[in-house]
Image (cartoon, rainbow, N blue to C red; front, top):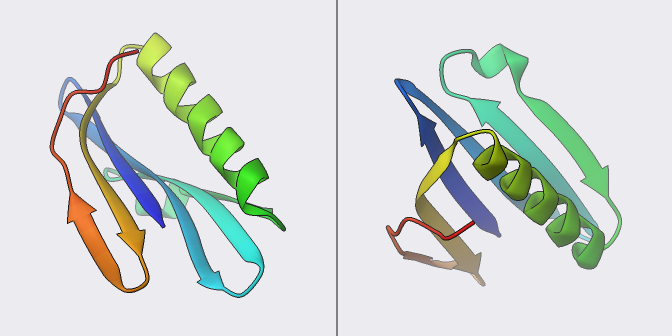
Length: 87
């Protein structure tokens, strides 16, 4: 549904919402340098998943991470908008 890519120094990570299962939303944080260390939190509603994603993104920005890209996926389509997002 939503994927943001963050960068800090030489490190990159992805924070995304995956809605591949009906009525279930996973918020995933994937460090590109150690994919095995990824975290996944499950939610039963989109609002809670989006709130959690926003909280994680805010905390990452506060810790010095910069959003370098985001993708919004809707009904099999996606739109990529590379842009540094304001904190």
